[in-house]
Amino acid sequence: MNKKLEKKSQIQMFETISVLFIFFILIGIGAIFYVRVYKSNLDITKYGYSQSKSVAIAQRAMFLPELQCSKNKITTDNCIDLLKLEAAISVINSNEIHYYDLLEFGEINLTQVYPSSASAPKWAVYSRKIERPASSFLTFVPISLYDPAADTYGYGVLSIETQSK
Amino acid sequence: MKNKKAFEIQFNWIFVLIAGAAILIFFSSVIIKQKGITQSSTNIEMLKQMENIVSGAGVSTGTIVPLNIPNFDIKISCNKISVGYSSIQYQSMVLFAPLSIKGGRIITQTLAFNEPYRSANLLFITSVQAKYILIGDALMTEANKTLPSELDKEAFNIYDPSKIRNTNNYRAKLVFFNANVPSEVPSSLAKMQDSGVMAIKVTGRIEKGTVDFYKKSGNAFTLSESSAYLGKSSMIAAIYAENPEMYNCNMNNVFSRNRLVTQVYQGKARNLMANTARPDCRQVYSDSLPYLNRIESSSSRLSQAQRIDISDINDISSASISLESQNAEAQKLSCPMIY
Image (cartoon, rainbow over the protein chains, first blue to last red):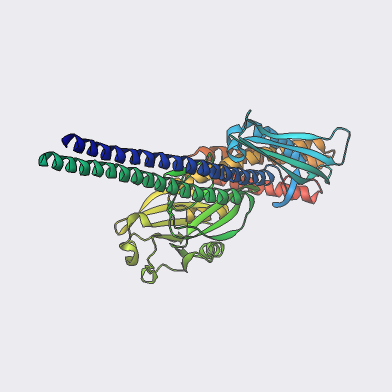
């Protein structure tokens, strides 16, 4: 009788332990599934942030006072002063840390489209690339090119590539 | 036998209690951890919004934008914005604001720093729950016109402490234009915390002048530091800045930008000199270079100065006036303008 009672209580405890064990396995499966879904949502959010950051950097590049056309303190949007451009490239290359804060990782190039010539003039305005970026966005902006010496306007394309780790 | 039964029952209950407690602890820790993660992600979301505002300021100028934001406590300091335990660090941020922005509605304003050409946009942010009391002469009128109408502000020509009311703001700033700061805090503001009440004295004209920062110590205003401003935008910056440290730090960044843009204009002036066949135009560009050099060297000093010095401000101001006359001369002679 005693042995029967002992076995009964042991079986009861074993039942409780096995129920708990299966319960925690189910919780673990649920947690793994939840973490996977959460991670994919985070990846989507991260991609969205990278895109909006890329747009912000492109805007900053387009509106840099170092490049923007101005006449008597009045600035012209979507216009680059070619005489300032050459000086600006030198200033940007000499102050890498300062411009990294504004433009981060990426590359900014300017290509003249009009007046067209056999060798389309191209300027490398800014370059700080990483070898294996986690994401990369390329924005093309049509821009007016002003030559103050000749007082003539041309047309070009500003390509802004932004990268993130 | 009965004892053994009783022992088995008690042991079973103890076992059930321990298992139950373990399950509760497990789920409680999951909930607490999840709450922390959600709070952090909300803070980061808020920081991203602030980052977009700061980025947008570099693009647009002369804008006033009221924004409704969640009721967070946003902390702003030199080159750093924090929300909770999350923060963004900048190398050279230009943002004048109180140290702590509270409430669900903020006002953002941007003004261009044009001394003498646009080199930076100054961004100002404050809460509608902060109060600004302006006292003084024609300079006060100009500042009052420039500050957004959405701000909680009052303007007086003459200082009368009985007219200053406590409207339950968390922060109050008194701005005296070419008028002395009283030694005593107005009685309506005396009971506010010392960190919530401050005063500044602006002495000079719209083009340039000095700024004295005062802090509240009990019932009295005590002078904490003096600085200087150049142009309307930096005068307005002194009104928004919480303290002289924030003002000086941000002005360092502004003059750092001014130095770089001036270097670009120096290059442009040399390019113009090299590319023009007309001797009269070459003379104008040659005459403008010393003024550009002076602006560049003064901006360089101010970009690293602990305090904005009035002598460097005077130097930039006089060089800017001379450079403007050279620019006007270029326009008169139909030469390409320097800026």
